[in-house]
Image (cartoon, rainbow, N blue to C red; front, side, top):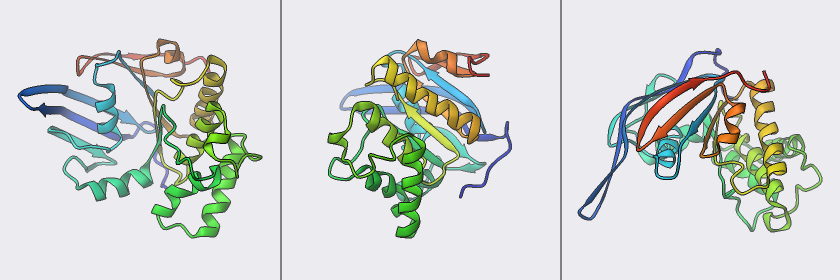
Length: 240
C-alpha cells in the first residue's frame, strides 16, 4: 500500500523541463522550459491541441522518460536522471496509467490483465487474484473477469484499464485521452469513475486531453501550446 500524503502537498514537480529530439539534421523542441507543481489530490487537466507537447509532457509527469534538461521530483526525490529499470519500479508503485488505446494484452483475460502490474511488484498470487476481482467489481465488471479484450466493448476495455491502473494502489492516476476512443455516453461513465476515485479514494488525477468538454471536471487546467505552458486556470468543478 502506498502511504497516503496530505492534501496540498507537492507530489510531482517539474523545474525548467526541456525535451529535445534530434531526427537526423532536424532538432525538435517538444518541451521548452516547463515549470509545474502537481499537488496531492489535485484533479488536473493538461489541455492542448495536437503537437502542443501533451504526449511528451505525459512522459515527463509519469516518469516514462527523462528530460534533456531540467529536474523532475517525485515525492521530493530527483528522478530526472534515473535508469529505466529504476523508473519502472517507481512508476509501478506510485503512478497508474490509463491510455486512449487501452493497451490491454489481448491473449489475457480481464482478471489476468489487472493482475499483471502486481506480478511485477512481486505480490503473491492469491493476493493478486483477490485484489483484481475486487477492482473489476468496483468498475462494474464482476461478471466479465474471465473475458478477453476482444470479447468486450470499448467502454468495458477502458474500465479494465482503469482497474489495472489501480492494481498497486497508486497515489496518482495519469489518464491519456481516456475518453478519446469512446462515444459520449461511455466516455461520461469513464469520467464518473475517475471522479469517484478522486472524491472517495483521494487519488490525484491528471488528465491529458485535447477535449475542451472535459475541462468542467478539473479544478486545475494547464493550457499547453508549442511545448510551453500558455496559462493555468483554477476552476470550480461541476461535482464539487
